[in-house]
Image (tube, rainbow, N blue to C red; front, side, top):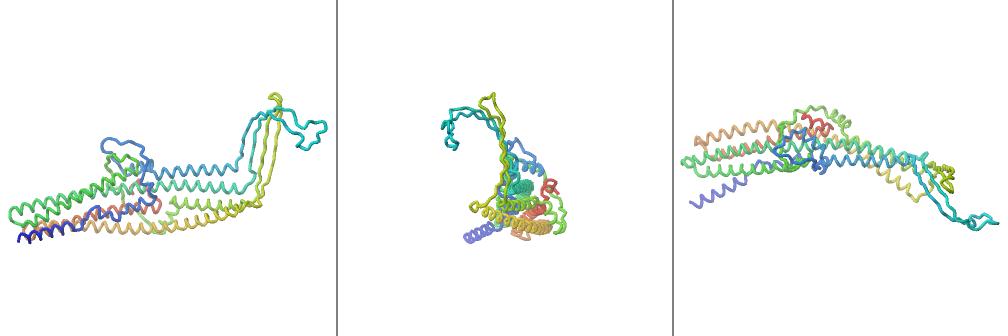
Length: 471
C-alpha cells in the first residue's frame, strides 16, 4: 500500500511538473520585437556610449530614450558618416568641371645641344655654354565642355540626396528600435508583476492546504499539489525577472547608456489609440513620407544620369589649358610669358572601356528600377500586414481581458469549494494555471497591440512623431 501511494505521488509530481507553463519563455518564441529591430539591421541594436553611469535609478521616459537613441545609436551614426562620404564623392566629381589652378617657381641651370635641333651650325658651337634662368608660373586647366563629367557630377548629386534621405530614414528606424525595446521592458515589468501576484496567491493556497492537511480535513496530495504550484510560480518569477533584466540591457545598448546604469521607466502606457485611414490613403501617405522610398527614387535618378554619362564617353570634349609667368636670367630682369591651348578630345577606340562602362551603367539602372518597384510593393505589404496585426491585436486584448476576469472568478469559486470541503484542490490548481495563462496572454496582447501601432506608423512613415508623442 505504501509503495502504491508512493508511485501515485511520484506520477502526480511528474504530471504537474510537465504541465504547460504560461510564462515569458513560451511567449517569446515568436516575439514581434525581432520584427521591429530587424528593419534596420543589427547596427540599430548597438550604440556608441557618450555618457557615464549615474548613481541611483535614472528615470527614463520614452521620449528621453528616443532622444538618447538619436544621439548615440550606431545605425544612425553610420548613416551620418555615409552622408559625409557621399558629399565628398560629389565634390570629387564636381572638381572635374571646376578650374584647376596650380603655381610653381623654379631655378634652372642647364647646357643645351644646338646640333640636335637641326639648326645649321655654321659658326655656332654644337652646344651652348652653361646658363641659368628663373621661372615663376601659374597654370590653369578648365574643361569647357565635357558632357560625361557633367552627368557624373549630377549623378553624384543624386547619390548625396539619397544618402541624406537614408539618414532621415535611419532616424525613423532608431525610433522604432528604441520604442520597441522600451515596450518590451514595459511588458517585462507587467509580466513580473503578474507572476508575483500569482506567487502570492499560490503561497496563500499552499498555506491553507498545509493547515487543512494538518487538521486532517484533506489528504496530503492536496498539500503536495499546492506546493508544486507554488514552486512553479517561483520558477516563473525567476525567469521573468531574468528576462526583464536582459531587456533592460538591450534598451541601454540601443540608446547609448552604460549597461550598468539602473533605470526605471516612467511611461506606463505610452501609446494612445492610433487613428488610421483607408489602405489607399495610408499607401499614398507612405509614398510621400517614407524617406527610404525617396532615397530609392534618388538612387534611380543617379543611375539614370550615370547611364547618360557612360553614353557621353563617346562624345568629344573641349579643354582649355593656359599658363602665365615671369622668366628671366636673373631675378631683376624677369619678363612675362604666357601659353594658351584650346584642345578638343575625340575618343576613337579605348580598348572597350566605353562599352564596358555602358554595360555596367545599364545593369545598375535596371537594378535600381527593380529595387524601387520592389520597395513600392514592400511598403504596401507592410501596411497591409500591420493593419491585420493591429486589428487582430485589438481583438486579442478584448478577449484577454474577458478571459482574465472569467479565470479569476473560476479560481475564486474553486477556492470556496475547496475550503468548504466539496472538492479537493486539484480544481484550484487547474484554475491557478488558467489564471496564469490568462494574465500572460493579456500582457502579451497588450505588448503586441502597442508594437502593432508602432510598426504601422513605421510602414506609413510617421514613426518618429508617433513614438515621440505617444500617439
